[in-house]
Image (cartoon, rainbow, N blue to C red; front, side, top):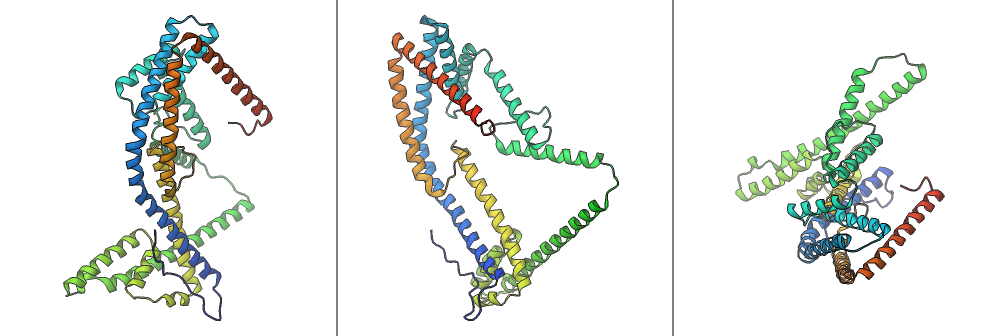
Amino acid sequence: MSRTHPLSIQPASTQPLTPAQKRFNGLIKKINRQRDTLEAWQEHEPSFARRWNTEYLPLQHTADHLQQQLALLLDHAADTIRLTEADQQTLHSIICDIVEQLLTSATLDNAERGTLQTLFDKHSPTSYAEQEQQKQAQIKAQVEQAFGVKLGDEAIDLDDPQALMRQLHAAMQAEAEHETASSRPRKTSRTEQRREANRLKKQQEQELAEKQASQSVQSIFRRLASSLHPDRETNPAERERKTALMQRATTAYKDNRLLDLLQLQLEVEQIQPGNLAQLANDQLKHYNRVLHQQSEDLTIELLQTEAAFKMRYRLDPHASIQPSDMPRIVNESVALLEEDNHETRQMIDRLQESKALKRWLNQTRKSQQFDEQMFDLLHDLFPGGMR
């Protein structure tokens, strides 16, 4: 992806850039990189979605079907094959694990979900509905403890993080309002008074700086609006051109995008590139404050874009993904699922024979015991690092 970014402050031949000028150029470059990344997300995802829908999802349907076959095969074995109590317990555990994983799949219809939940309830001492309630209560308690709020009796939707964040924000706001209403004035020491006075002073200075920065953006927009107002043009083609430019300026001003406004000024030759080097240091600081906020907003937008992408395609929420990773993700996901499906088919064929089933249960149980022992050992060695 290529784009020309002519907006920068060039150093004079006899004088280096000031710190504020260097920061201005650095922020411009950072914002342009962030915008390029956002454009790459928008450009590459349609191709990713087509491949995901045509190559990966059919394999996922097949995987779900094979896992259901395996669960039903094991269920039949539990009813028809004489097993030791240890093997029975292992079999129940495996069936419940398979069903739990299947119930997170988006490919199942309501009838299949009902059948699987019934199968889970058959092999679990706790019903699926009760287990989900316990899981939700546990997560709710963890969220309440982490953020110091009460979410009340309202259920939380674990499949919709945005709804959970809205619910959490509302609870935190209500908690803050309650604390404000119930607080009582108390005597403060001189040290506390000085701290409060310093805090208020810093707050006022910050508010003044933000106001001045906002006025700088407003001033640029007014100059553009005065120059670009389409109603003052008699030529239809020029009126249409200025209408489009005015729309861009209005959108940039509304979103507080200083970079766009400055680039528009260059585009309509309202300023020259060399003019930026003549900006007063205070004015440049105001610009840098606005550009910094614009970059922070883009950072949040990028994080939200990446998180939404991972949520849409049920990818690892902890993985770091860039738009350039999309072809690799499809290739690796398809290859891994093809291998898993091949192994599941082989397992279904092999477990038809009771002796093979018993050997597999014994091996699985030993593997589970080993994993538990390793977890306990690591927990003892690193008690603060285990979750």
